[in-house]
Image 1: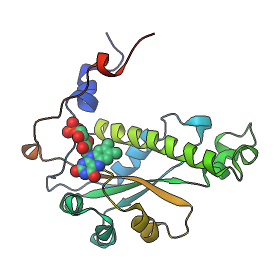
Image 2 (image 1 turned 90 degrees about the vertical axis):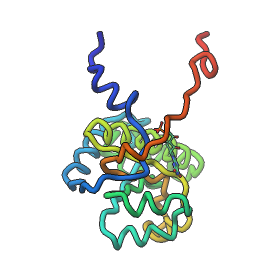
Image 3 (image 1 turned 120 degrees about the horizontal axis):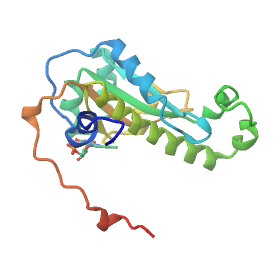
Length: 195
Ligand SMILES: Cc1cc2nc3c(=O)[nH]c(=O)nc-3n(C[C@H](O)[C@H](O)[C@H](O)COP(=O)(O)O)c2cc1C
């Protein structure tokens, strides 16, 4: 007996796949907002919420992304209804007066480049994972990607220099006829121990 139905667990984990080919079905902007509104509830350290998102939908925005992609990721990205840039804000702590008002975040983070970077990368990666689960739980499919030049992408989309890309995620309704058999996962006893 669990609080989440077996159906939901299967949709989010057991039956969810990574897609490279997409059905010809658009994704409403409203759904992107719903994805964000679910994702944002996932936990981050001191509620710092460093992830930032840019949703590329228009052909013009996709063209701007194209030169940043590794060749193997071009077709799947250009054909996806939406590509999300999941990024992190190195100035995330400047919003913590609202997000975590009972501490002085400036004191903790200001001029501590290594702490800022590690906190932003760790927590935006977590938020990226919550994002994938939110996408799946709202009936969409996704294709996350790290095969791109972050230097080129950051220059093109975040020229001010304080926001850095973490990974990309294509979104849409996946074409299940294009799937290969799923890769195996490692068993518990190969990677975990209870001590
Ligand atoms: C952070 C991240 C980066 C990835 N980068 C790429 C990529 O650049 N190109 C690609 O084709 N797939 C990429 N993938 C897809 C993975 O290979 C895929 O999610 C994994 O093999 C699991 O596949 P499954 O969900 O179908 O079981 C990436 C996945 C993640 C989570």
